Image 1 (spheres, helix red, strand yellow):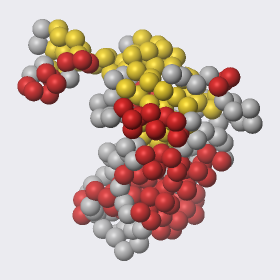
Image 2 (cartoon, one colour; image 1 turned 180 degrees about the vertical axis):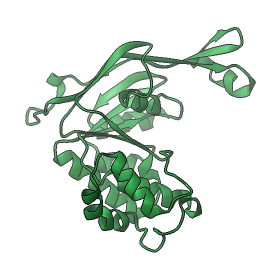
Image 3 (cartoon, one colour; image 1 turned 90 degrees about the vertical axis):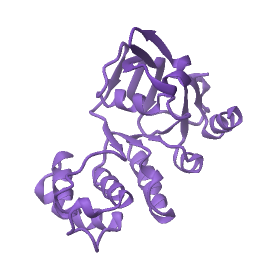
Length: 254
């Protein structure tokens, strides 16, 4: 059930397209063994000792400037595969993905250099985003404060908890305004205060005509942050539209 331009409310005028996903299929190979493979039989096609996982099956949609799009679905539904495909990290087996600019993928597993201090990772992360040294210096205090890392920023990253590392990664990533930002489960970490700050930052980026994709299992974060929701189910685009309607249907399907 996909939303078309004619399905949008009359008072909503979408901005220019930023991401076009056209008939996207993604397949990858995995070894077939054990209980996990047997439980995933619906998604898999056996081929000797290798199984072909059809992770995305003809997904199509258009994202526009100023949209904050939630991406929901059960574990293994294809949400993260979709984000990695939009980011250009996975080649389609069939179909195409077009982006108006290079998407920035932020996930809880995004790598920072564990042997270096938080301070040095802020600098390196800023440079990787394309910021100049002067821009990093100007934003440095704000990045550290947003992450709540003032007391620990001089310590090596390897001494940080997973939550501390994830907060710092998020803070570095959103220090720059991206035209297309992909956030994969990054709001699942931190306390309630940090999640609220993160959600507010995503709303600000959307209002600055950016396009934000948010993958999350937290329906409250999705409803508080997004103005559109895509539901991926077993690699298919199950529903695309109003957040309340899509989340209600998704929760009823469990």
